[in-house]
Image 1 (cartoon, helix red, strand yellow):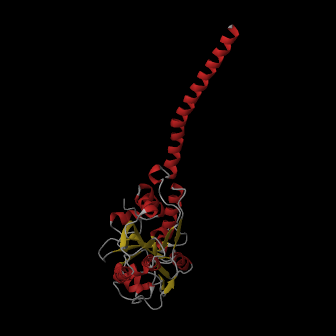
Image 2 (image 1 turned 120 degrees about the vertical axis):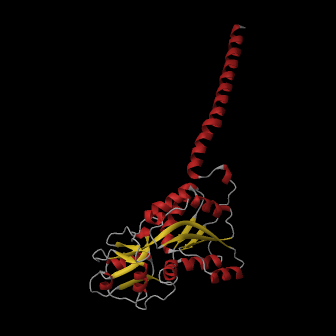
Image 3 (image 1 turned 90 degrees about the vertical axis):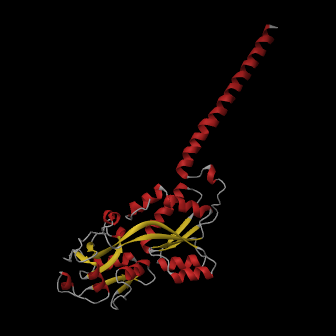
Length: 310
């Protein structure tokens, strides 16, 4: 009888121990498990709010070579934040990106110029509702070879140089040497902006070298002591190239092409950086656009060498 009571007591004691462990494990699962998941979600962005998000298709963005490094950094960090997302970013020029967005072959166009009226008309013909997103600002740096003694120019000087009105560096305080011009090709947003803003809609000189990318301009100027070209601020850090200070008017003080001077409004050759979509973004594209405009996305703008808008 005593032995039976002892066995029954041991059984009851074991049940209580198991029951207690079960509660403890459930509590650990409810608290500790969720805590780890929340931490991972905070890092990856894969939280409950996005649990129904369709990540099955790749986001495709194309356009401005000025913005392609920025776009690729955005995409890289976005995919780190949202592990299920996939995205492709390629260059080719602002016009190429806008045309692809109008034709419905990409989700987002990167553009370093505002969309033109004729492009808006083409979009309308294709039942595309163009929505513009300003995501940053860029200064256009005027680049020369480091051995070129010219340190500053005016907006009028730039127009005279790139239209071919003046062709010798001696006209601007430099050596007696013929100027070599390096420009982007006509499908580039930078080409269009520079023509409209600096050349005041006049044509580029017929002898200008039209380069396929901003990096090609950089490489051309690096190898040419007589060369001059225009590039985004982010490219000015390349070794073997020198930025020229620019004055808006003859009597104005020239400002060096820097982020600080663009923010202060002192550097005259500056512009917005655009993303264009067909209609207001939805789903995973909206998630990406929200990321671009977030504190993290705008920090990337600054890290690349552009000016954030937030």
